[in-house]
Amino acid sequence: MARVVITPQSVVEPFGAVTAGALDITFAASDASDGNTLAITGKELLLAFNDGSVAYELTIDSVDDEKGRQDDITAYSMAVGDYVAFGGGLTTSKGWIQSGGVLNIDTNNADILVAGLRLP
Image 1 (cartoon, rainbow, N blue to C red):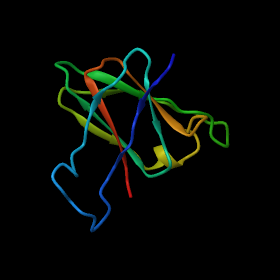
Image 2: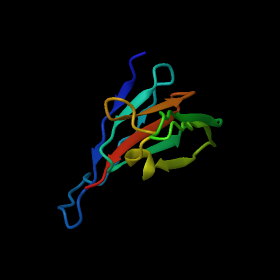
Image 3: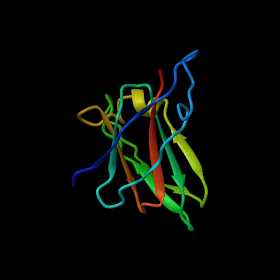
Image 4: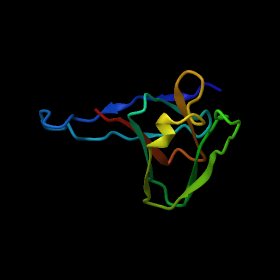
């Protein structure tokens, strides 16, 4: 399975120039068959939106942390129209960072739209 890369979008820094479109966020359909991946440096947020007509699910894969613990965010249910944000410890803590410095995301339908934001 070759996961589809979510390219992080840069957020305008404080006092940065704000031009037309500079604050827009672009969402893309998740890849329900191959999954997605987001490169992480510790400054990222993963946003998801259920654009479908029924509830769908999102899973974030974990890996063993320094104490051998693992705990996926499994089948997080998103109702129709739900927006969710994952960040903080997911992008800086051992247990979430896969080999290659990425976060792995799986959904059960392409109607879950995803976007990665990289904070300044």
